[in-house]
Structure formats: structure tokens, C-alpha cells
Length: 306
Image 1: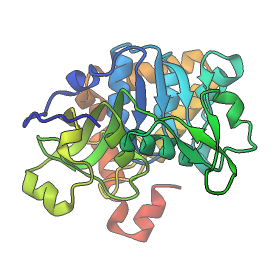
Image 2: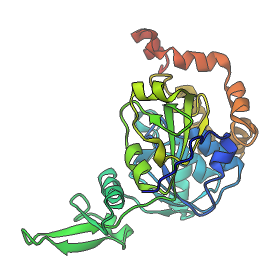
Image 3: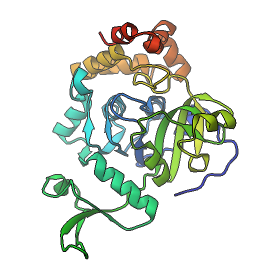
Image 4: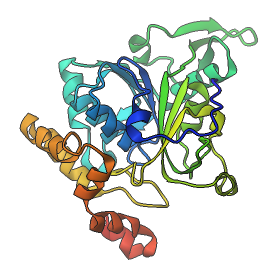
């Protein structure tokens, strides 16, 4: 655990993303299509980051975009895809098939155990789910111990201490205190185990307002925070907005079609938008308002996903 005690950590997005260096071990917060740190992902691509080792629970467009743009060298996830909607992540799948990135498939429970080992300051912790699977083959760093109480042979995993964790939160203050709405996925554990935590928030608020909502990640764990409305788009950030299903479909179609279509997508939404303000203008106020109206009624919610 690293302590960051600066009383004012509010910075611009480009400065926050600059904490991530080439080759860094990067933990991605959120999961699947919820609360992904997409503004930070887009900024890393704009800054041309390379050789990243990304780790997370189960992710989607964030990992796929980083892989598609050549930012990733090693990917350590339990799943990368678009759930029941659009299937497997196309850029990730191509990279896995061609060997352009190293795949170290893991599972959420194992990653959680490794983070806890880092938090506790112990050299290893045992896991059960890995035993008997091919995951051992992908992770030669795993070991075995004999339980001193039962004699059972257990698989043990080393601590996982990311260089930086990227987290998007609905609410935070200038000190870095963050409020998250459940599910937290692995964000709390990433924050406690990582050397640096870079956060984007929908809104910067007073410390008292964040405390009233509930501090999920305390400020002393956070290195820098940037205020970025819709910073998780096109994934969701409840209660503020649902995920943007048509946009996800547009990305998957472009990434599946090939280099020309993918380049066109990047030109329009990532490299062609030098700031997140420019990105939001391209998405459009009408669309952003629509995904923010999900809670108006059951019919409003359903309409977003038709």
C-alpha cells in the first residue's frame, strides 16, 4: 500500500494519464460494460502508450481498444468480450490467434487472492479454482504448498501489485476520496494493492458530500483525480447513465470488419478527438441525454437496448 497525501490531486486528464508509462502493469477498474475507465483508455491511446501489461476481472471495449491500437503486450483477464449482446472482442481475438499479444488467462477469484496477498504483505496465498486446469500452464509463477493442517496440496499464487490502477467513479473530491456504487468489482482491491491509483470522476464534489454518499476508496490511496463527465462512455456509470448499446455495436462492427473500418472509428472517436470535450461533442448531447434517461421508466430503460 502506497500513501499519497497531497491535499489537492485534481489534474487534467492528459496529466493523469501520463502517470502510466510504457510497459507498466495496469489494472483496469470496472467490469464487462460497466464503469470502465474509458476516458483514460482513450487518452492513453492518444498519448501513444505501448507495451502495457493489463490486468482486470472481465472486460470489454476498454481492453479491445487498447489491443487494437497496439498498446498491449500482455493481457491477464478472465474474459474479454461483449457479453450476450455482441460476443467475443474482435481485436483481442485476432491478437490472441496471431500471437501478437501474450495471453495469460486468469480468473477473478485468483486475481482477487493475489491482490489480497499484496495488501496483506505476504509472499503468497492459496487458491482452489486453478487446480487441475490449464491456467497453471499459462502461469509458471504459481506454485504448490502442502497444507500444514490437512496435508492437502494447494496451488499458491504470488502477490499482484500493479504499477497503476485506472478507476472511474461517479463522485470524488479533490483529495481523491472516491464514492462508488455497487458492484465494486475489483476496484477497492486494485486501489489498495496498486502503487498508484488514477481516477476519473463524473463530478468533483466537496469532501462532506462524498463522505455522506460513502467513501469507497479513501483519498490516501489515490495519486491523481480528473473530472471527466461521461468518462465511462460507452460503458455505463449507474446511476448516471446506461451503456450505449448502439455505440458498442458500431465499435464491434468496425473492429470486426478490418483495419480500414477500425481506423475510421479511431479517427472519429479517439485519435481524431484530442480531448474528451471533443469526444462528447461527437457523441452528441441528444445521445448522452438519452442514455441518462434510463431510470425514467421501465419502458425508457428497455428502449435503450432495443
